[in-house]
Length: 210
Image 1 (cartoon, helix red, strand yellow):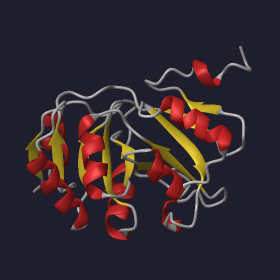
Image 2: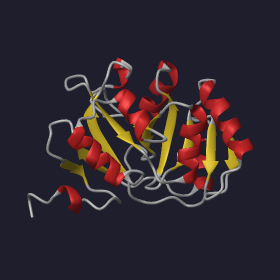
Image 3: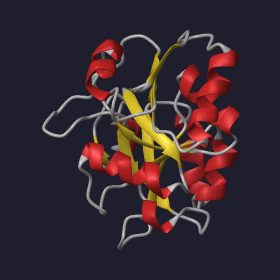
Image 4: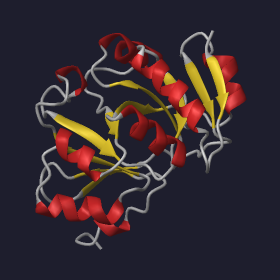
């Protein structure tokens, strides 16, 4: 049976954030809001919770997991960021974007794309997501909360409680979530390339195509 925390979406209660991080550090799987949609997350190096999320979402080993970071300095530890990529990141974080970058050796192999050794990174502009990553002191391994067979992310925390209470350890209710995942931009090959259009405006990355 999962726990259910009601956390203020603009001023997250420090006590609840601390308890949530304790659950994550203990090997828990947590559902939490971001500035795009709700996501499922766990510790990045913890194989058991990662496999639970894979099964829940029915993901294969080619799925690009995302590391949700509290700021740009965390991104630099887990991804190779050149000057051009840094400019893009600085201009568009925090925000509803996931950036695909070449991973450093700090990223566990089980999270990497098997052929490309890339990883998704994002700095969400949602106070709850930021507070979790900040309190944790390292990124959260995350994927959008889109269940198998569905096209849209789950948005109602009470529905999440009914459907997922035996599959996750904690659901953080930060109000209704968005119905679009983040916009995904590939920076691993130099020029930005939009891989998925979500709630982040893709036009800044499509200048050469316009």
